[in-house]
Length: 386
Image (cartoon, rainbow, N blue to C red; front, side, top):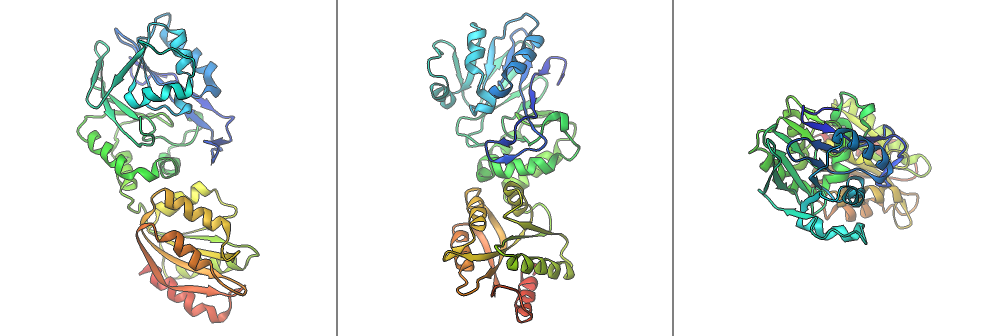
């Protein structure tokens, strides 16, 4: 695939993977992106996951057409991008590895026994590397989403090699026009904790004339980049993207589920623009996390369990905690047959989160929702939409 006449795509699709990073379902597969810049000197931009190593090496050999690469630029040391560094170094003995100083320190973690002596070219913020007519300008991007990450901007053709930034789930052969859907799930679950760091990179990007973005996962972005940049700005500031309410429930025997469904209907009857109902025992956790960040309002309905809250709700709130969930309105519905305690447990998990408004009243039901519970449910529906 041509990105430009002199920048070629040599990445691969992985249609066999079931869980990315052993936790995210990827029914449409995953792409591992890698690129080559052809000039007086040749730069290979990252490797790929070892799962697809043979295919990548074949793609690289075709593009090189007998030439030898001068540089391997490593933007990110995570194994889905860097597994083949040692093989590449051994195959091309004159090639230097260009990476951040902190990435260089990580090399022995992954490649014990590989001799990188004299092969490392460390770079820092603002450093440049001339390939001939192309010049790479390096941009540090620590904690987007590992500490060693760099990005690079090719000044002549105005291409940003964005590491894991602007990535998405899905193989390129299954690509659709709806970039935001899987890019959003990818962002909040992979990079969501690091909004401040993403904002810092966006500020650097704003000083550059970027025409094309080449991420390490997902499609190459070109044309009008404003929609992508705007979404990343919204996401990394933890601002809601769309109007709506997520009702996430954790039910054991169906009573809490019935209450959550009834509450969702109350919201719709009051004109809520969008109501998303998610069963935490069955929904993709990563997708529910995505929706929690997408909408400004969240209602949690959970059964009490072992003097706490049903485990799938605990897991959901723990995930929100570690992804830096903030700036939202949250309502609580608890269920308990003899000693309701889910609301207390949920509050304990919510308290560390920033700028959260807990909306009253908290609704308590006993085993099954009854007519006497309706006034409190209606009051909560009014309050969450206020």
